[in-house]
Image (cartoon, rainbow, N blue to C red; front, side, top):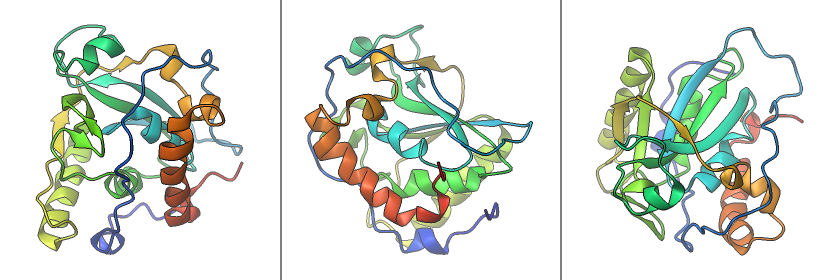
Length: 223
């Protein structure tokens, strides 16, 4: 994969975001162990990225499909309260965003490529909202783990704003990572465990996932 910083594809992006019913809260099946997402050997080094771009059921399902992503864990970040629950985060009082923490192999997929997927799979111009999911917990955010991630995130954001890829200004938060709290077990691998039984998965996540797979066919894991 090309690990370089490339913008041409981003400048002509058609948003994949769908204005569909809001993220549900009903408990699901018990959590499976997070699996290695790749069938071929990984390098000895791994890296971490933390993104917030709407309901974590959707974003986890998308990033788990990428070759080089070892795991994508749903959780909360960017708030003040310690060990927040889903109910507390949904109240909007903790300051946390629903997010995913991605562990990836930088020899298989770069942070630039993860950023490209991030920008193309949500609307970064809607403040505290993705579709019908409304609240500060659904804000767009990149929580960088080092200065290189910060610089790349800000460079992408500036270039996209200048390009006119969206008619409205990008409101994505770019903040230093502080702490990540994994979400409750029933939120993990939600699409995998509930795709055939939950209407939200069938009518919201699956169409978005299908579009994502068409756009990023060359970046999907092979197994």
